[in-house]
Image (cartoon, rainbow, N blue to C red; front, side):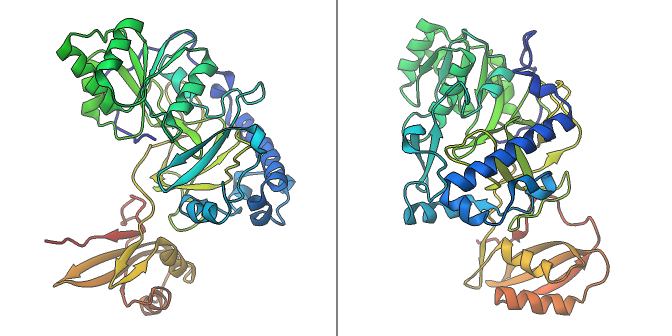
Amino acid sequence: MARASERTGKRPKIRADEYYDRRETRGAAARQKAQIAALQALIVHAKKASPYYREILKGVKPAAITSLAALAKLPVTRKSDLAPRQQARPPLGGLEGGKPAEIANYFQSPGPLYEAYGRASAKVKDPWRFARALWAVGCRPGDLVHNTFSYHLTPAGRMTEGSAHAIGCPVFPAGIGNTELQLDAIAQLKPRVYCGTPSFLKILLEKGAELGRGTASLKTGLVGGEALPPSLRAELQAKGVAVLQSYGTAELGLIAYESAAMEGMIIDEDVIVEIVRPGTSEPVAPGEVGEVVVTVLANPVYPMIRFATGDLSALMPGVSPCGRTNSRIRGWMGRADQTTKVKGMFVTPGQIAQVAARHPDIARARLEVTSENNVDAMVLKVEVRGQVDAGAVAATLQAVCKLRGQVEVVAAGSLPNDGKVIADLRTYQ
């Protein structure tokens, strides 16, 4: 839902009861032990209840998944595969892990893609898990939340509303549009917390000032769904509303969120996040940009095990100064799907991964596509651990992609750390 921005402006004030629960400050060993136990239980459930996972995890023994390294050997499910799978086997492509009576809502996202969430219960109080992000912005029981995320078809409005209810907050379900009616509601009800896109918050604050409608009750907000440039964050702060970002998707719910420290985004306690090389299922080194792959431990009706979001990010070193001890990511850094067309042929990150896999001494590979006099050209730049035969790599490139390309060996560490396996450098005038 949200994209990362650089730290700027004042930090939102956090009350004495700063942490949502004790899990946020537990040690790494305790967190991993609990998550592995939950992961094993999830795999048992998914294999039993979901036709899809029963097939792709055939032969996988849940008790053998005792580490993140073991998790990394399981198959990846890509977001791009969901639409055709759902069309072939409605409603959810065989991924459903619960009976219809256990499902509270079906949602539709662009694609179209369909998602399902279970009912809130004593066992799963907050299926969407945005309560943790709301708590981080200072939302507390009894605070009225003005929720401008859409309630139509897509899940964002319901996600944040359900999580606010989990905290004990009443919600005004404003949705999108109807700016003047929303300003009337803000003036009358005096909500303290805003949920929605940062751009719509700016519209509300500016229109309120123009019409003389009071918006001073709004003090803090959880924003997402679009970029939050430092200038916009500072502008909202100057207008009296301190905002933090959340990052999530319709399939997964919350993935990560900002805290008052505003140094990266802290991973939610009920997910496991891996960063893999685009086009593969293999984790990259910490700090390297790659595709965000998420396993959700708390939505049994729609299990997500190693779900590749198509988003780019990177793990950050250390922990947040706010005291929360889980790992952090840099936030949304672009899209991982870099499929491009060269001379009328599609070239994919997966094909570049195949080329690299056939030459074990290639440490990193990046295909650069250019055009001169309207003629496309490819150069595969590779960082190597030892020695490679550039001619042999070029032959593999042609065999895999059905296109000729040059191969250039470059110095270790010289390729940009931007997650791009294919860089389309063509310009058209």
